[in-house]
Length: 410
View (cartoon, one colour):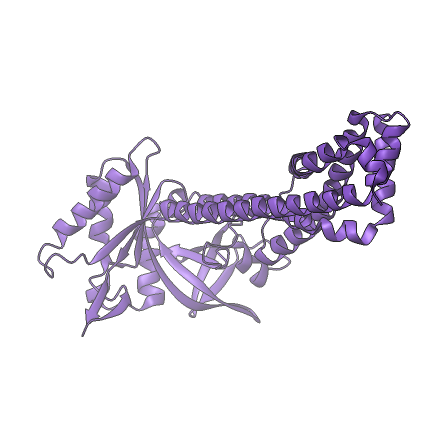
């Protein structure tokens, strides 16, 4: 009997008991679908994390002011000693490996042009800000050291702001009012997308930090050198951990006269935070992989069980084939092909369900769909391997039946 004959017999056997065949393959369906979803979710999430790390800026540390505690309760970030211009200069001049430092002072303010208005985040920054954040311009120019020093009323706007305020015109050179103060638009940022926290990073207006203090924040003289947070860019060849320790040591020295040993600031490596998220995703991937393997094993046991039933039901048929010259290897091949066919049927159904589920997850999570043909081929190969492993025992049992006993069976 040729291999093609075995396939035709297997297809006929599946067709005769179609419902039983489909129900038998449920374990394989779940296992293969899990593999597809596992790969799609894992690669999609990793791709998204990589994008968010690049959006944060490479080799960047962020210094936050501390949180004041009262009666054992934290008052929130920035309620303790604020960061200042002196901290910016000290970090820039004294820490090795630092190639850029920028403060950031955020306020929410209305932006008006004619009859159009938009409430957005106005960030006062230093001239190094776009360099530190790896944030290119789409058009126009960056804020300069001269703009910051002179407190110029100039602004660089994000894509969302440009779309809302200037839907049909070039914003470069236009004048807008922010808290009733006129600002000239000198640049438009390239799109940055959502942050790791889901905030639209393009909904922002950047102005010189000196202008923000004097014209927007309305800070008192006591707070007139205040900096909300600090972004510090470290040279690619420098040690991030070492630079972080040096910055922490420097800030502790500058705050030596404050409360005990409790830091009044925190320094965070956001790339490390994102990598920690990646590790969590990897752990989840391992759990999904374990689920897939268990499902395939359960499915394989189901296949073996139904094939043993099939051998019992067709014992007389096996005896007749042997009686007319059928060889043991033909019987072995026939039942093995049936087991593999069952698994491939389950694999195909699992692929369809897995791809649809992956597309749904990617749509909800706003991730790219990353299911390559090699993954689909691998899932089918895993299903076929399951059929071979768990179909071999029933096939051997059928092949090594005694022909006389097989013919006597009812």
